[in-house]
Image 1: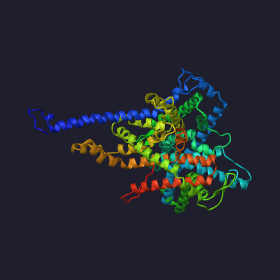
Image 2 (image 1 turned 45 degrees about the horizontal axis):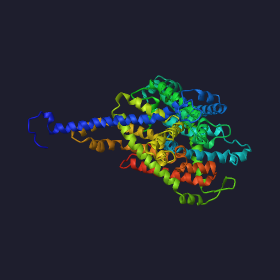
Image 3 (image 1 turned 90 degrees about the vertical axis):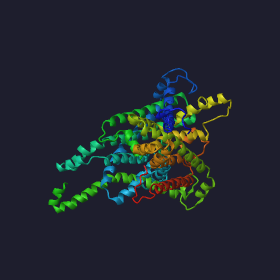
Image 4 (image 1 turned 30 degrees about the vertical axis):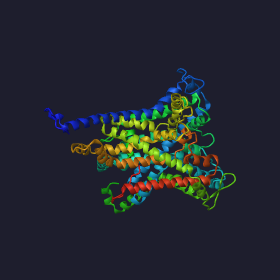
Length: 313
Length: 299
């Protein structure tokens, strides 16, 4: 750095200049971070917007050629017997999976607190395996399992002489595997962050375990339970892979219908069906977010989103 | 049962303990049953099937042969394609996800919760539909057509190529990378960054020597969470790759649902599980390096 020829204020000296340069880099970096974040969110939401916009397309021919706003494809789709049946099937699968997973997952989370360590370790390992294993592995393994027990050549079929085959009774248990673990993890995270003083106070006041649970523990766990229920519902409602492996005659769900449509060639009706599916899951998630947002105790974010983000750690 | 009441009647202590044990068992039993029946035994069955042979009707004949594994090793293309796509997909997720997580954790202040919600919502919304949307965006009437008009290169395609599938993978799994990164960065002590700045360290050095080491656990967890499902992905290569980008997912789907060669598919499935096990083992080893207490969290 050459010596300045004329006296300049301290802020313009070498150190000051370096800081000024750093600040200029600083604003650049800040701008880049902002721009990057904005672009990522656009990237995440663009497909959703595209599907919804094109579902209002009045065209009769090409899906992506805009031909005026119209609700004709919604009318067409909602009047379609096949779509009605598949939508109903998806709702049946979604609701029953959510009920089973929420009850079993919550029970397991409560029981695990009191379980001995030799049991907890392998159980936890299985929980993590069921969450992290690729869906495809679960799908093909459950197919092999059901085929060799209640399928045509299965053991149960050979013993009882009655073939149970595939249907809701194979789809729902297969989908519940992942979701039980999901509910278990959500409820357990909430349990471990729970304030024990109220429970102890209840016991000190001679509250029975049963009443203590329903009046103290359960209300505090409710956000996690609600979140688990809604996430299980959307997972099961939207699932393609497991369902396509273990579904049976007459239990085609919406994702299977949409996938078939895409393979056969997309029509404007496909977009309407897709938009309806998006609408259902989005409203369920938003409802869950609003329901759980205000309930949280302590400093932690008890909303659905907050709990999922916490699980990532 | 309160401890006071129990102490008065010694006999009640053991009764109470047994009742409590029974109760605990009853709470866990359904979940344990699910894990044993629908996770452990199916995977054991797949392993058994992988050593068997296919009978003429497409069923399974018991046997003990390594032919299925030999066949899988002889044509490793789907494995290599999936490994390539998952590795690049993970790196891309990291490059896109790290600045995003950093921004949300350190710059977003009051909007933190909102930004996380906005990240969670699409992630839990119809994976299939969101992937399908890219068919419209990247197709002939979308980006590919636009680039064709612009450059005059009529053979330009995105769908049916590896970059197209990669885009879908990054799109689908990015949030799984961002969540753990966000959590580790959010817990970071900002005073460390300030200290580094006060000591005159340039931004890049601060990032490399302070922020990155702190974010490392989240970075590794995120990479695992993204890499493993990418390895077993079927929907994205099928829809955006038109089945021309042939991954393990495509090969397994074909063997199980179309060609009905279950023993061959089972061997490939075991291969996929083995890759997964290796990845997780390396992860556990890496996170426990130099630690005496084993404290592993995969998720």
